[in-house]
Image (cartoon, rainbow, N blue to C red; front, side, top):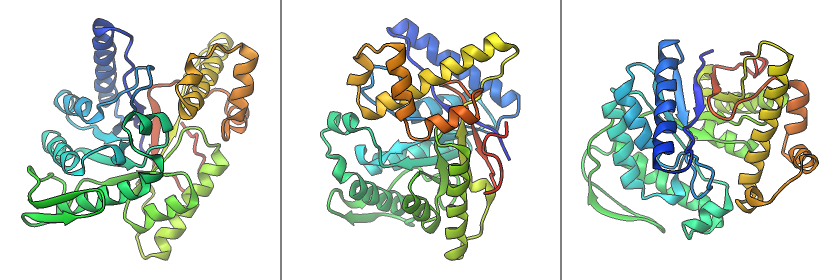
Length: 315
């Protein structure tokens, strides 16, 4: 098992505050590398008004210059919103600048208001994702120029430069939760990224599904091909524990509100209402009951190397 970081910087409102927050996060990652953490995975989100990272690869490029060993991951680049050739170029450049430390995590997206902001129908997410991955794989594995003619994208006689250092390409990671998407990750050669909310028994089942599908299709099972995100807060007394639980509840509420839409974030909510909404989040009640100490919005551990029978919260 290896331990890493997951999340990203949070803007604080206004250029000065945003700059300070981003540099604090950079220093946090630099210190984590000194302490032996193996990786950092950054999210990509847009239009939240909540200060989440929107340009993850730009931030990772800066981290590449400030670090030497820690692996730099996207969790995830939401492909339906991007030109796949530009993404292939940017990711390859990041891999080059980091001397081959990129972990390329991708996903389809799930927040409806983000799709709306980009004027893209959520129903198109899967086909846009599939085409983008076809283009990116072709860009990184073609020996020279290539063309691609799809439904959403057309490219004629193009070549992606530079080439990534990791050959044939940086490791692909797929954010997945449903059984079918997990099996797809196993079939198509992705590593697997699992969420921070699902309770331990569900995480164990998902890892087992991934392992079974790997074995079914003849892919070698590697425990290090699974990343599990968990909230972690170190506490020293009961008062710190109480604050940690309150923080974690707020984090889960914010995640649920953002998943439903930004309107929920702007709507006043009494404490009792917040608790009721928290309980409606998938897996939240069992997760908090089983592990009330788990907390922190930024910097949750990305634990890699879980066997299906292992505890997903073994920090």
